[in-house]
Length: 247
Image (tube, rainbow, N blue to C red; front, side, top):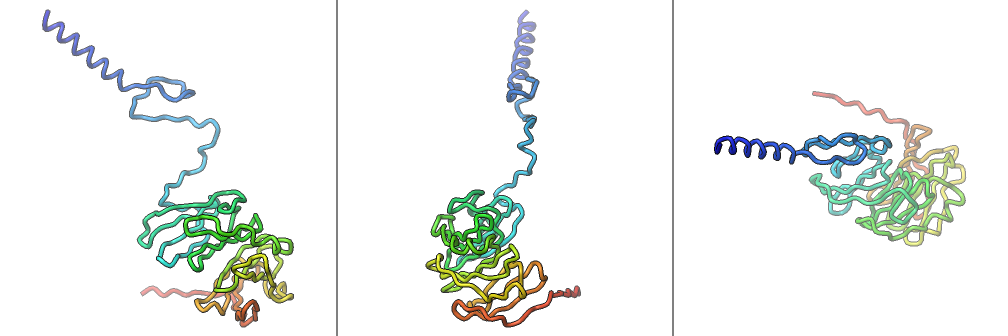
């Protein structure tokens, strides 16, 4: 009798242990006998159709630059976000988002860092954003006077005194804005349409006196001499062919 009681008690413990492994799933899954260490989720809305990316991955990176400490800033196009990594590749932070707030943008193409400030060409908000290295707002309203004459800023470069802005709507001109008073703008040569039509990217040399513009439509580079707010065409560079020799 004692032996039978022990057997019954053992069976009860095993049964309880087995039942304790099961828990009610989220509503809508249609069953309730799922072991506790397995999660099944049925997405009927399609909201989980896109891949989720962890903090150390980047999604559609479109531009990259570094700050004075060597940290790397990567712009994710579709996420409207900048991710920051240290010089060894460790993730530090991210900021941005879709919208028209100061630290939000809509599908920007290019940004740059100068004097440890972020200058971003907010393409579909038709604005220039100036942010701190942590994404805090510094300037948000600098391109309204320019936007009345040329929408869709794509390319941006900055030197000590000026911000250079190239546009992607076939307008073919470059705006030059004073760095500390963005509402004041001057313009490049009137005949830019015959020179270039789509400034996808641009960059200045370290001295800030030469500007290279990448023309998306004409498949060429254009180099300008920079004298204050004046741009002087120096040379047209034909499409470059890079030949790599493997030893």
